[in-house]
Image: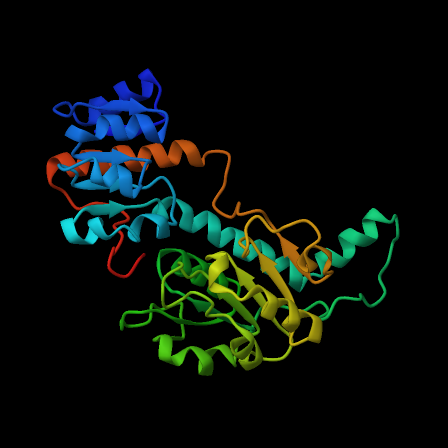
Length: 316
């Protein structure tokens, strides 16, 4: 097994979970390729060159939740290589980020932070598009009720919100989601939502999904929050929807392009909150990721059920 960025102490810690496995560390992609010839499993690296150099490869453990660059490698599907990611770690934290952005808009924090920066004590009506509002009784729609979307839905429901969602597979709605539709139900459900949350991965079917037509279908004055992938949104169409007032605001942890270039219109919009792809970050998430990898390593060597398995054919 080839492991990315592990200290000797970390390698020994991993070895204790899998005594019969030879575990070696690699700090660069080139080192990983050089070591891949006899590797059955790889943690933290994924590229077409690496997969081609590893004829015995059976399992890749990604170091993040997003795996679009990895699932695009044809050999993963052709060879039936198992792919796992860090969705189990990222989901709860990303859901908290969504809630934070939701609260920020509901309580008009962007406006009041600007007032604070100017040294003004202002209780006048703000210049934001939507104004303060209560979350209880509002409708949140979640595009992509996967691991991350489920975490968002639970928290929104706990706040007294009505939750609807779409997902690719037809499954019964969990008790905290009023209705779960398929992608064909996207427009009817999105029309009812006060807050639209995008947790979708970037695939051929989701690329540029949020375009002018979909923004026009949303309830006037709705808020849009994106913690999925920037490429699922047509950025120019988002800017226009914000300028026209069709959208009251947007909370963006991901953008297209990314990073967002200096001088882009989104930077200066008073009804936009931008965070630089940090929704999954916490002070302790590095250790949590190592713990998940170690548990998956233990399960893999024991023939057990793996955590956070990616459907390579679907791309998530």
